[in-house]
Length: 233
Image 1 (cartoon, rainbow, N blue to C red):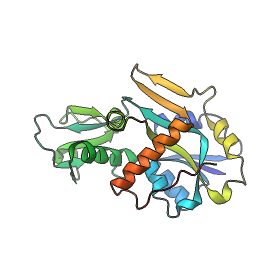
Image 2: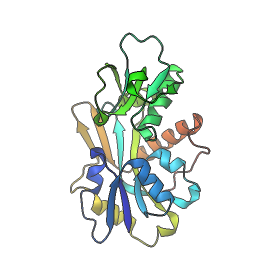
Image 3: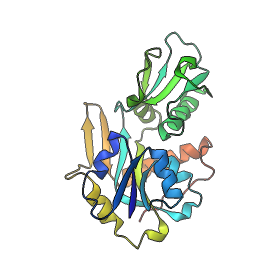
């Protein structure tokens, strides 16, 4: 089996274990989603946006074992503004197709009724939406922690990665066992980080509710064309 995993550190604990005879590739998360859509991988750790954009939603199944869900401030990604800014009008995102770019735009629209225009460089932008490992932006010192803003706005976690497979393979492989073995040994259900944020590593009812809320928000703001069911193996 071919498995796609996002190449950022936050996702690494879900692929730090035993892959056995399976092939694991590490690529940006939007590429994971594309590989799954085009049948170049059979299993991928994708975002809610990738799940909601599936060409045929009935073809996808969530493997409800491990996941990555962010609660409160984790220092993973930030919405940044120029100092002294009155009303932001433009934004720059180093990774415009990334899920967290979409989340940043959604939050600005939901919380502040801001519809920003994309520009091609940080120098032109009023606002930066980026993972914190994507670079330094000294001209944009006013910062909002993105996952904390989501928590404050919606009072639920933000799913960053869920295991998804094509439904025609759901019975061919023991995917619950495979994804469990792929995870780091002794991975906790919930991990507190830096005294404020929490990462949830295990799928449960809380994870399902967070995913449903996220999909509802993506649908309401027209980032996905239809509201998908949460289909879990």
